[in-house]
Length: 446
Image 1 (cartoon, rainbow, N blue to C red):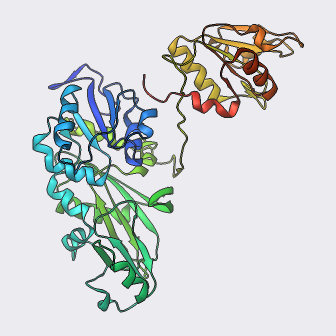
Image 2 (cartoon, one colour):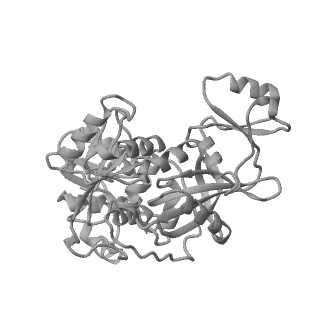
Image 3 (cartoon, helix red, strand yellow):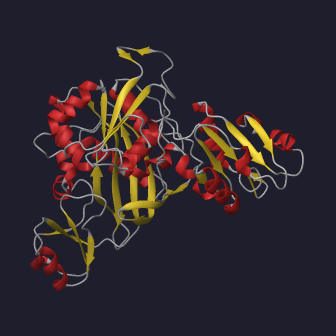
């Protein structure tokens, strides 16, 4: 099995299968979405316990306001959703959700894509992790109390937590006293000053460790790796094999290590789930979330990494403004300018082309409304965008654009503020500058 399933049926499984990502708006959920949204064998669903999150901009099948996993009513509500939409698999996208769903696995009527409950318990609590692997894999020195600390700085973090929340370097006994006053279980650990690494792994349903990919966490923000780079995996392979041997793991998982003051690698954490940074290996041909789905179906997978590209990845926040016009799509006709709008600095505007493709998929006519001097038809043909334009309206120098715009719910996209102002004031319709096009993009697969 390489890139996909080419038949309607494979063994006892009928495709497409319905996969729910929960909670879908986390960085983990977004990475899972990017990994499987375009897979023809999967119908994708997203759900969250929040009132609303970024999932609303990504999922055609989106459900908000579910109870949190620790609420008494969660299981019944969640199972009703699973049953109503015939969900085949749930992809947990948060550490606490992995643990909760693993515990409820027998009472949830679909597959849960995480490792067994016993594994999740060990991985969820850093103290349990360090105690379990002590003497097997290098772990940080733990101080039982503040009185045992023999040198500063130390590193303090919650025994149960994620994304570095509550974790901090502590430089003095006074600082440590104040932190430990909080009503939370903290670990007092040796301070590890060296480079930090994430090792993304995949274990098959047979327990075989089929993939490890190591990357350095060069820069992080809020516990999330925003600049990461592939490094030699060989030094991490013995640790990966030992973890895989000691814990029962299945599908995508990862562990993190950091170098101590003499350069030795020390275990920081293990998580039986997808990591947000797995997108680096996805773009090298190893789609770990998709492999996890195939593996859960009992399909033996084949992994091939294209090892030369890309070698590093940057991440940042991305805007998902939602169109808020009334009606099915909010507009029935699109009028678009050419110079400095569709063609910017001598090049086709790729964001606008994306929107025009969206219009074509929805059957919405696109009218090119321009005063361009020259053979406009020849130019758009040479640029390869002729098929995205339904018709061309050429204006005289003194003609107002508002005089050529018609239709039930038209919109105008134009770089010129004065042109947009004239149309908006005359016709009262929505107008967009080139910097506003992202608000028109619908990322949902529908």
